[in-house]
Length: 464
Image (cartoon, rainbow, N blue to C red; front, side, top):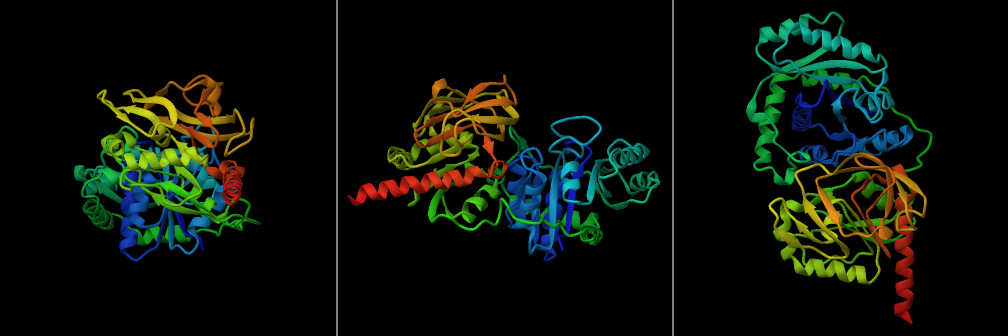
């Protein structure tokens, strides 16, 4: 049985993430094996999910992924788990496109694709019966979405809670209410919530939150709703659970500075025969013995002194590049591979220097949103003129790159369509665009195929 629930908000900022993390922790404390998911392209919320549950959180994005692929991703991660908890994004119906139906990439769309009951989180502060009108509106807006329960946040008193509960005429489960508690607010920073690596005393916070949720929310009722679901079936697997074709090692940068990954990407690489070997650009002196590198995003700007001072690691990456081995970098990885990064205060820090540009942090959001990416040339991921979709979100900008070396021509997002982005040189591809490999299933296979070809060529040359 695929027991599952989706926690959605009426809008952003209603306490959805805090409540979701609390539910995950409280259920784990009761012995449940919880599989977390996040709707949309966000990386920070999944970091908290993973920290709390011990299981890697996955992103379910109906703009980037086809419905069948979403089902594959869900089943691939949720098998043998007691319950899957999916955290929504923004408001329940908010997505890329507006209109009567739920938007592309919305929580509602994921709920329909996976036939998953929704628990609606509503900020009840400064309202009473009007909350009942909101609940009715959300239920009737799209009746294909099964809003099975409600959690009220910022409730002033038991009387306040009963007023709202009594204002809802139709039968719907109220799982409980949370009094306002400033100490349980999660802090935010320029990409959203503070990532787990930067949160002090996180374990204590999670314990307090778990106790708070257990006290105020009916966890037994939540499990009953989650278990009252039909199994998700697919005819065949086309993206996940593939037979291995290669015998390779892929170095993945993973530490305080670099931890923004779609974990499905790593799963797919491993399934195809790419063993993941993690390394730290901050703490390790050299790369592990690997055939290719994957340097994801994160917050390198928070650890610039440490990254600059680790000269041995930077030299190790330069040597790897000089051997013409494949390197794929996204966003923060692009910045790390550049010549230098200028922080918010204007201080400059030397980086790896294999991407011939200079990165500077700004107070203004430089790019945000989904994009379509067209490959400008044959590269380690795609052939010329092949397309994929991805997501951008960054406050930094890079200058000094030549148009002829761009990796993609982009459409959508923040900026004019047809703009050139990223950098390619031999077997290096670096870009601000975050890719989910299941969007274009050829990508992970191409990456490993190219890596395998290069390894064979170099082994043959060495044996002569």
